[in-house]
Length: 506
Image: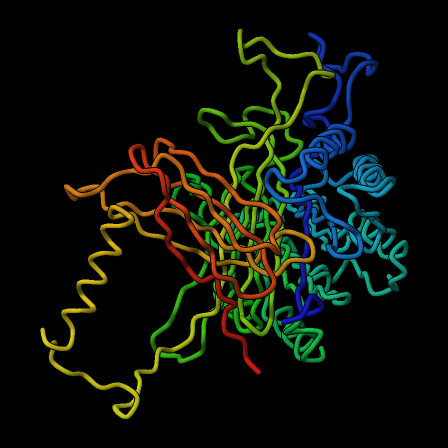
């Protein structure tokens, strides 16, 4: 399991920027509805860049800072870049993209090839009956973006917006850019809110994925970008709007699961959520690799009536790390949602724009692993015998002595891909205490060691939860030692647990 087998992708996921009259970072409005002078205001791109400088400086917080030679950084914009699909609003979106790639971020230098976009329902003139007129401004915007990427843009026919759904692959990354807004039209009640991926687009996506080499497809981190919700959570159903998820979501998700996509990123409802989609049909025997569905909140909407109701609602964006090892079928998906703070925590007054800042709202850190059908061992490999005091008592006595030595504290471990550059896996170790037993005693402290190769010993003190947790990043299997210290005993008790490497296919 070499370093070169790993793929580590970091994503800056922003959605629903809404450049236009409702944009959060506009100058304040006056009594007559016009905008005040812009002097002293801050732009969204400057605000996000300043926040990322702080995230980078706090390396080792949610995840270590990236290095260009080890981690690929991309920006994913999942629709509603504008409020009404007007040229001047797309110019503001263009300036945002230029600003994100103008200087290094998180230790990486971005290029146009690292910025991926899909349209939202606000990015087209959805009141026009003609598809070509609805889509002309967006197609001009994306054509310019593709031109800067060095990709031929003559294929962007505004009369065929479904063709905007396509696969982009290279450098250990596969991105499915999905246009769920091809049929959006204001006067069509069935289409005004919901997303739609037609069968023709699904066929084209499948063909593009099949045409990739096995290494380019299976060895890559695979993400899908879409604007509408592929799965509408019950808490996000809007009364009176009908179904506003994605028509053909089932074959779309089946297609993505078949090709082992790791995550689906989207926007639309301005509500940040993360969950794992791992639906299994008992009629099939195909192993299932769960996909993380990551909904971004709005990074730029400034109209309270367009935001969800509830405490703590604010603008957000996501920092996502995906680390993937193809032969072990394991990925770690780490999502940090950053929220905009605009009010003083002490008195609730609104801060001046130069005091606006972002903070971590929530971290969702998950292991995504392909399920494999369980096959019971054959009778030749597994035998049973009745327990015997004659044969087993001495071993039971030794087990009891070990239990007494650690005062009914036991080592537990969880192994997942490490987000540290140059490392393979991370072992999270902690103490599970049998607290309901009369012989249980909590240690004063626990020292964790994995040998001289790690260069240091981690000391964990008693905490409210009593977990005594530590983490080790490693590239080869190791035996971790725990030294449990007690109030009235000089010498520590010793316990061991093995940090393994997950099984890989040859």
